[in-house]
Length: 333
Image (tube, rainbow, N blue to C red; front, side, top):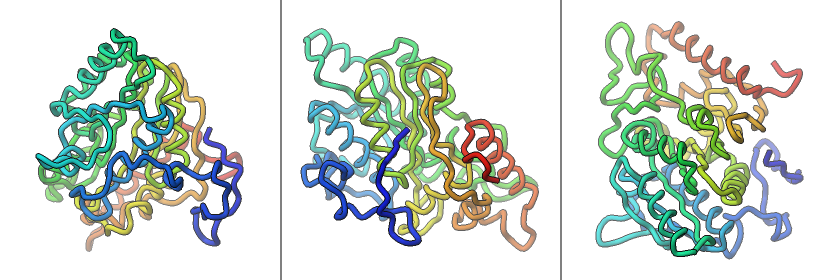
């Protein structure tokens, strides 16, 4: 896993001061020569997790392939806020695909590069959870089945945020969206719906699958770097909190991503050829209430009559993740 022999943790936090490290030990983002693949001037909301995730991931990919990278980008928040015509914040070769065919467009790009003999130029496809788990799911599965030489990155903020915060198949159970209202006997998104695409990617037995969050920069950069060192189909699913859709404070984006991991709501792991090979362990196990309460999309669970049954159900799902992916160190409860 992303083992880091660095112990300079600041008191009371999980951060590390890069000024204490030798240049070769610093993260890509801390380096003076980072690529700034997505530059300033874009129109993302304050605290946008997707903007952070894209910057971290694509800069790491550029570093890994020495700047020889082309990206295909599905329609969605990332495309809309970064490329308002005729402007762009991207400083790499970048292609805008339709909402549902980013994987297919990237496959075509990889095939063209192969025919031209440019095997040192790599291809990344990227999209949100709507364009990945819903509209683009067929193209993505085809890319996996053919084992095309593409790294697909999904930035998961749990909904169609750009078009008004509607439910996607990655919207978590119990969450309020514009289409899963906080009304009725079972308010919020229904349980038992949706899909966890990393597990589906593993079922295709592709060379590499990983999950990550914007709260663990070094882990995310490590996984992107590792993926770029592999040929064939690869998939990385990054949790990127959305202050607008989640109803959280803009300064709490990293905190929310960390809470998702520490509660077990979002398991962070790696898999190769269909088998889990490593997990990022929970450092301090927390109840799901710690993650749910700061989000207005769950406010209906904590009203005058708290929905303890729904909260307990969400806790059971987190506990299942902890057991399934072995997220606790031995001896932890």
